[in-house]
Amino acid sequence: MSRESEFVVVANRLPVDRVAGGNGWRRSPGGLVSAIAPVMRSRQGTWVGWSGAAGEDLDPFVEDGMRLVPVRQSAEDVELYYEGFSNATLWPLYHDVIAPPVYDRAMWDAYVRVNERFAAAAAEVAAEGAVVWVQDYQLQLVPAMLRALRPDLKIGFFLHIPFPPPELFYQLPWRRKILEGLLGADLVGFQLPGAAANFVRLCRRLLDARTVKQDVEWEGRRVRARAFPISVDVGELRELISRQEVRWRADEIRADLGGGIVLLGVDRLDYTKGITQRLQAFGELFADRELKPGEAVFAQIATPSRERVEQYQLLRDQIEQQVGRINGEHAELGSPVIHYLHTSYDREELAALFLAADVMVVTPLRDGMNLVAKEYVACREDLRGVLVLSEFAGAAPELRRGAFLVNPYDIDGLKETLLTAIRCEPAEQARRMRVLRKRVLEHDVDRWAADFLDELEDPAAQPAG
Ligand code: ADQ
Image (cartoon, rainbow, N blue to C red):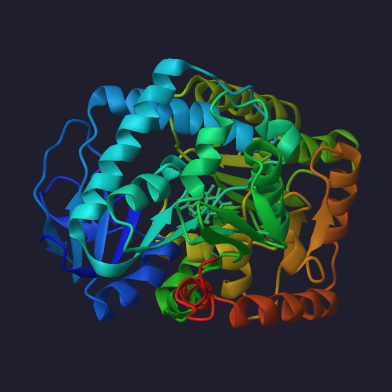
């Protein structure tokens, strides 16, 4: 499979998961994969990524019409590059240092080493002049490494998480190296214009690069920094909610939850998602006697995530203790006020949960975009339900007119907003949901991918002379 792909995606993970118990593969759920899969097929694409199992050596294979090139990661790479530099350094640094980032030289060395491996694998499969699209914070050095190996390629990079302002980014001991890595791309995509502006400002201040609006001149090329807010696979969600069994399941969930107003949170168990703040606010509404047990119930679904990183273990303990305390104080026999499930669900069950929820509570302390908010909107064809959304979610600028916006750090504000949302009349729900749906349905994930690739391949974007 040497140098024959016109289109190459490079991401930490391959777009497939092992089928439990068997040795086959199945396409991973999620918008990114479904947005890119059609482009992969029409352009003979190849996806370069890790299988998810440490120490595994796999040959390239074809699955679901996509050519897949596995990149090896040893157990040490997983510990230092993935759990370490990616998730204990970059993740907290890029999310407002909500948790303290770890700055460790061995982790950095592993990050460089693994990025080199991904760049080499991509260089090997890309055809002359091919388009290569690198994804996310784990691979920020790949664009420059790949350009050094293959100057003929068109290279795009998309960051799924926020890009921090200079005053935070300055902390990073390897700050210049990260910027230089990204500048290997022709187009650097961010979720929001503010993130693109942070990047351009940092290139000017730390690298002395000349910048013109959102373009950075670098090594005789012009690198574009632009915003492309990601979205959800509306077609997939529509199909799911059209199934009778999904609707029945939604009714069943509502009945199981006792028949009161249902508030729902669906997140990866992550300290950026503001889970403890929302549960605290909800619990206090019972303490204040604004709500009575049975009147409203909170279902919090938390997908296990990064379980070997210390901050995630601490958070899990904290949430479990909090749920226990709130239920201990306010629940009645047989009817807890919070249902907490530490598990991952399939797409059918998630769609049923969205249909069952009167109030969708999405209150991250910082989030690149937040797809859950958009998934909820895409599922509510019935124009029922309300969205409570953090100002600090990347989705807020797009959804501010239809959602109830909150500052998740302001517990009193959060309590007030939850009550307003719980009491929102059906006519007002429908008015707001229409506004939300217009935005989400017109800007789905296919449009996101097309916008990015059109900009990357824009013939009018000439290199600086
Ligand atoms: P995440 O931080 O993972 O993504 P999000 O955008 O909400 O956050 O995506 C999570 C996805 O996982 C959603 O599709 C959701 O339905 C699914 N999910 C969550 N809990 C689940 C559960 N219990 N069971 C099954 N599925 C579950 C990162 C960035 C975001 C950005 C995305 C895409 O942090 O800001 O929106 O990438 O760019």
